Structure formats: C-alpha cells, structure tokens
Length: 337
Image 1 (cartoon, rainbow, N blue to C red):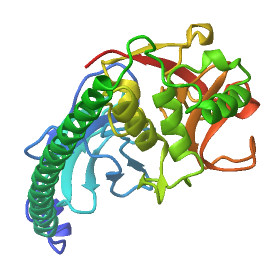
Image 2: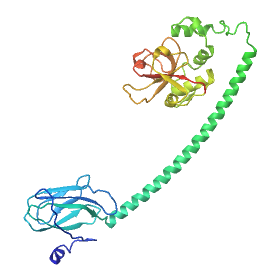
Image 3: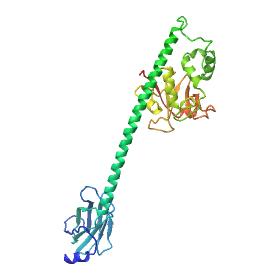
Image 4: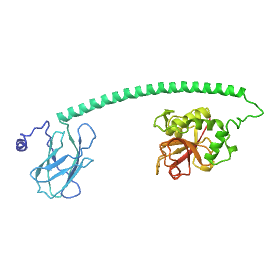
C-alpha cells in the first residue's frame, strides 16, 4: 500500500481514498458502478474511469453509470476517477477469477475552483431573480393603474352613452320607433348592397353608422384611434359604442373570456357575434384575428390583409373567401356583463 501512495504522491489531490474491493457477483470479467456528487444525489455524467497500467477507460453515462467488461489478470489495480471541476479519486480493486466488481455510488468532491464558480453563479441567479421580481411587481402596478384608468374611461363613456340615449328617447315618436328611412337611405342602400340583402334587413342603424364612421381607417397593430386601429381594438370600440358592452382588449382575451359563448356552426351566426381566426393548421386555439359578423356571410373587421378586396384597414369581408374560410376558428356570442 505504501508503494502505491509513493507512485501517486506527485499528483495534486485534496483527498485520497483507497479501497480494497472484492465482490462476488454473477457475470465474469465485469467491473461496473455509479459515480455521484459528494453531498447530493446528483449523478455525474462524463466522468472518466480508467484502470491504471492498462488502456482501459470508460465514461459514465447520463445516469452516472459505467461498465467495463474486459479479461484482466487476477491481481490488484488502481482505478482513477476524474471529471473537470472535481477532485480526482483513486480506488484500489482486486481482480479475482470468476468474480465481478461493483462500485456502489462512489462520491466525487467538488474542487475549490468549481465551488467558487457555482457560488458565483448562485449569487448571479439570486440577483436576477430579485431583479425579475421587482420588474414583475412594477409591471403589475402599472397594469393595475392602467386598468383603473381604462375602467374610469369606460364608466365615463357609459355615462355619456346613457345621457345621449336618454336625450334621444325623449325625442322619439312612439308611433314610429324606427329612425327615419330618409335620414338613413344612404346607409340602407350602401350596406344592403354590400351585404347582398334587402334594405329591410338593415335595422341596427347604430351599428352601420359606426361602421360607416370607421370604414377605411388604416390597420395599425396596437392602434386605437382614427389614425390607425387593430382588429381587437376595433371590436372593443364597436361593442362599447353600439352594444354598450365592455369586452377585453386583445383577440385572445376576447376568445378566452367566460362571457364569450363560443360555437363553430356558421349556420348559427347572428349579427353582432364575434368571429375568431387562427393560423392554418393551428391546433392550440391560438387566436390571431377577430371580427364581427354582420349578415349573409359578411363580417366587419380591421385587417392588414387586402387580397380579398384590394384594401386593408376597417372593411367588410366575406367569410367564405378561401383565406378567411380556412382560418376560421370559432364564433362567440357575448353574454351580458
């Protein structure tokens, strides 16, 4: 044993373990075992297991296991186990004929450089986590403030709508509760032709007045004004102005809302239903566009796509157009909120 230590005394080792191992197993000439990290259950992959005095060397697999199956003369051997970041370990084994050896859970200790490196990484991760938590808190605070601001604006808009409605109701001639056809003849003619329906089907003048006001406004991702507007902002504005209902800001949130009663049968579509679209062959209900159904297979929306009509922005499109037909995901009828 003293001679063995003298042979390896020039190697820098923080710890030297020598074990004399002789086990009775089943298979002949089999030397195998498991290498793990000291102080944890982590199995070490890629550790090099070598038998000194021979050309035999094996790497541990992802589970820390190694297996050496060689015919060796019966005698004692030094086995070295090494891996970058760990102190080298030595094990003394004795090969006996018809005997197998199993090294059960041999532990490697981290060297000082690796310990410092891991501590540095851990400190960095803690700092990043604290920074991320601060960012999340700040984002949530801003989101709450933005929500409060939007709610106040919505309440103001609702009150304004109620006042406008009350004034109009005072002027209504109950003998004729419909808006004068003379005042809306242009709307009747325009939208009955666009939708391919008779003029008596155009009854929700508030809806078509809103569409007429916004039709032709360019599409702008994230836009919310007459300078440019995106699909979900348009549907949100329409619902607030025409139906006095608040709906969510994004198409995905409008789709996911518990107040949206979803269905896929196009034969059940009614004027005012939300229509949701997705990418071709999408199987995860990811919504990337929304519009509002009108009549006769037509819907109004704000879109960057212009190959169906030649223009983009706020416009009326045909649900049966190949582009929209193959991207149709579902429709949704909004429940009163």
